[in-house]
Image (cartoon, rainbow, N blue to C red; front, top):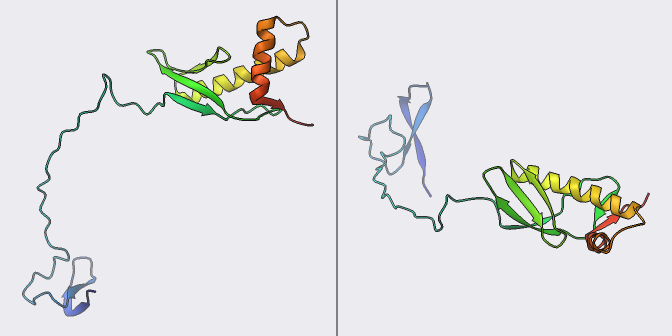
Length: 148
């Protein structure tokens, strides 16, 4: 544990009294509070694996941000992500639906709006093809109507 002693009459540029360590010789410069640091840093080159720049975009996500007031999620929907020159896509392979946007957040919001609208339309319609009934059943696994 270090002990600091106040040196009488040693005043810094800002008008504060400087502290001197009990182990510090009296001949040490009074204006230096900390010893000078050496800046000899070794440069270590880092090479990232892969062909492109590092990306913070995950390859797979669990979508849990359904923002429709009449609907709730039973469990998160697994999505795959893709980046293209035009933007970001999130894809629900099981239902063959997707969301698209300039950013990941935009793509997820677009997917949420798309999937909510699709679910409500499929639930309201009686005359559906076998493919649409299958998609409605898959969506019913993930989405439920909130009780009023």
